[in-house]
Image (cartoon, rainbow, N blue to C red; front, side, top):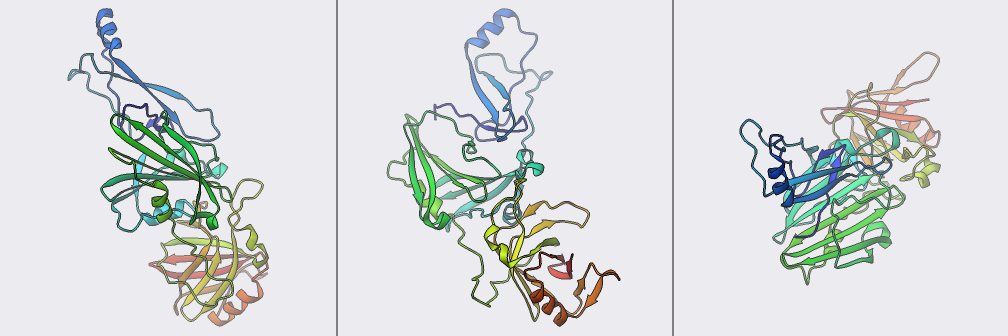
Length: 366
């Protein structure tokens, strides 16, 4: 489209949509040549999406009428900060992440690590691209963003919008959003954004095509809702088992703090609360939010959504109670199941180490 599009920059690195680099200027041009090139120059502004920092502006100039770089002065491209990841990795970065709608093809997940700031509870930005009904979509989610942050990377003169909408599937049917449409001689550009105020996540979904006159982008956003994966509080059933990635999972046993799940403390960090737990047979089920790290030495790199965490245990799993005068005490599986019940509202820390998809150590610590 002919509208100006300003693309998010990750820590001053070029990232998105139409631009992957910029031509290097020929310093040897004469003043006359520079004037000729400048007369045909178009400029696009690239800005950082970091929500709290001052946003630097970098001018990208495409000298369409100027001389092309010679072999001695090749075009210089800036590194792309977007890294391809798996859907599982995306879900570990962002709570309540969307999914690709049914029937989607060419599904691709990316992350921009440079936009994350762990000290301030800001996660890397996650992006999902997919094709549906011959239309190419781009969706983004940024945990820790402010409601007013522009995360889609699109800045243009909107023909229609913002229009206030309410998403029926998200936020128990109360999720407020905004829709935009830009129309030009080249076609249509549609955008919808919404914000989960409870856990500070900003979402966007955009699509561009020749004809979107009868198209409803909100309907696609509704299809991207994953549903509530939380186990029913009054049910003893265990949710469908999903193999856990290897690493360390931890949280605090506190049934009375269920209302804090999905909320942040005074430092802007998400509460970690397990408000329901059970150990039956070869399954340990911990319901709530848990942090994750690859090794014990590492600081937590993510906090999960409110869901039922299912861990597989076997006769080789070590169950420990830590914090006593004599140090860690190994206990039987049945004993540990009893401790889970008696400590369910204690505020003690429960930790699970997973290797090859199986819990090798499960412990409760003061």
